[in-house]
Image 1 (cartoon, rainbow over the protein chains, first blue to last red):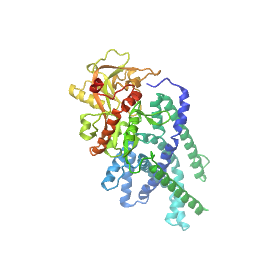
Image 2: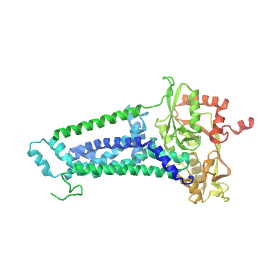
Image 3: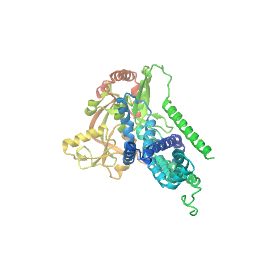
Image 4: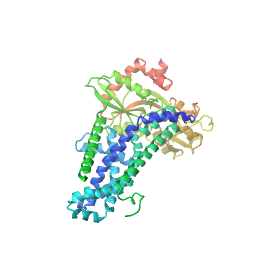
Length: 237
Length: 282
């Protein structure tokens, strides 16, 4: 049983947990950035309706959205090396962190691809036509006109994914990556002050979430500065 | 103007990708070297980090405990190997062993038939312990395994030796004991017993003292006859006979010069490293 609650421990644990703040943030940042890349690549076949690849994307998205992330982590952490072994690649000594980031990137990628599809879909067809009418190629129209608007619209969803990723990072401890949640557990075991450790942990996660939320809100305002009604302020037209 | 924004965005993306790759490579390459000969073979040991007294992180975040200190001691005596300890959830240990992520498991692992079929155990046991039923220190109703019929028994991990034992017992007697499995990190065993959510658990002589109440006093007591007389070994893959033999060699050395007994007294409170015959002979 845990020892009697002692609020002084909460403060002490805050400092100890912050030692692992860097690695938690690294997991979140790396997996989100890779996830954006993956999501973008996965969304493209469906946006341009490329025959076989769009079906592959749909299956990929369905699987990674439809299975628990912990299971995906185990499948990739234990399953991928075995599979890779068959084609002659030795992944035995690859650090667990790499598997964690890979899994989260693939998982986030599925959700990102849907957000991008929705965002791109929300951009008025007239924008593309106007782009063509001033002589832009379809690549230029997409990257300069459509994508910025699509990203601005998808931003709240992407913000959700980042904040969700922050919480998913707490599962990394199950495959041996020491990050903040893992450290909180071991601090609890070492001192028998579990509740205090978890309170300190929650405080850190919540403060980081608030900062991220605030940051995204500012980014959203800036990206939608020519369409304030979409950001929830200003009047139409 | 738009072109320069695109260029900035593109170069920013490139910077991200480059930093990412760099950080990933750095993290993949970082490993501590204890200054051993570069010809020493790297051996990765798997264990948990939440077993008090045996394998846990102290307040400063350093992995220590009986198993860990013994491994460091054995490492000193085996210059041809270099040990690296990796921690993970208990349930993942054997699977990690099979998939070659680790080379042997330490964690007070007992030998049982099921495990012997799939894995290799080294010959020298390094701890002897008895498993008995543990109940609330004020509980006078349970004194044996028969008293557990119809009651709830807490088993910390579904992959543990205790789990195998109770499952086998249940199979033989028509499932009289209700098993409640622990979940990852959220088990407050003493709380569970006090509130009646479980009636008892299985504990060993050396770990029952870690189950304390809010003031740090022992909250459980051991009752009844020993149910399992266990010997603790390292678990390896069937292809690691050479490593197993070397570990046995080193274990014999630490037993002979008294280091093993010293470690046991320091971390487990008593000398649990002698079998009954050895204890009688001394």
